Image 1: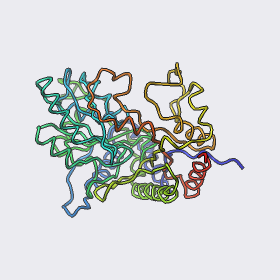
Image 2: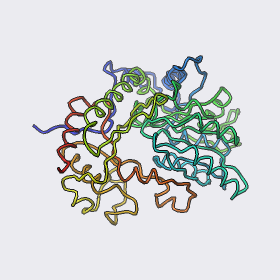
Image 3: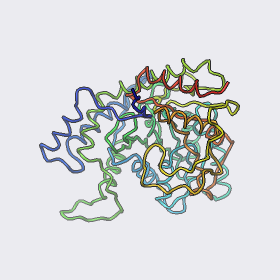
Image 4: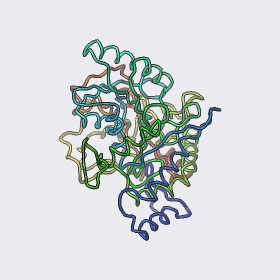
Length: 425
């Protein structure tokens, strides 16, 4: 019997079907537009979630604005930090494009900073070096700093905030992949001026599409709410004295989110369980290393489980890697991409990584390379970058493995067997 395909992280609804209940309420009451009772309820649920503090300190008092996408959250956070045309924003290079594209939406320039080896996230030493050099070169300090919780792994937020505070630069935490991840017991996204969450279809919880911005206080919350609802002034007609955006979450999507919040902790626990199983089953495989929490300060949600493959490890079919030009998107978005002109780019995973991806794909297992660093993306070829080689090196040897709520223990064992059987010798 053919095995069903095992996906990286497939959306999983609550067993009680609460998502359908809240969505039905939206239809029954004709709240099928942005805003409404589900949006209010979802924001309240999110606030209760992010404000829980496990480090012995008292509960936080952050506010949350539900938005149409995590990208919109990055955009609005940067906007309120004063980012505009001609400015510079420091952003982690090892990330998805949604961390950096909003900088360009605002007419600013991303300044990419490489990663440190332990967490794979922004290197604090290189961060400060970049700040000093940008001030020396431009006479101005960057307008914001955007660290990213890569695959859910926390960044060294203590050091990042110390540096940011010393230079007076606001921090917009991109915790889109880090929903429920914690640093010393505190939820990511609650340390900086703003925190970004994502509820895309493949995230820890989903609203089909959507995101949220965590704000420091009521004043920020109201300002972001205003920007996200077209920046309308208090008149009986539409009066606009600033440019606003149509970024609020729909009441229907928020209904899904309310149901998802009832299983959020279960989802996080499952991802951690899958991570532990990968670590156990792959610990004795030469040349394979599963990436985990560097120490007890880190508490990753393991949105995706990741591993590295030594260049010396040979994989069956490796000689055929990159022999065929890709004609569709790997892992989604098929039909809305350009056909590749060549099988190669100037920065790509090693042949053994691509060969293993192909082996797993043939075995009905979705696996992907790590994010290609932004400083190696053609669209950012002229952007300033402060590099140490870590993200490029990891991109060449790294791979993402399935971890979502539908991934069973049997699936993990099957995936590990596929990996072991693919290794030559």
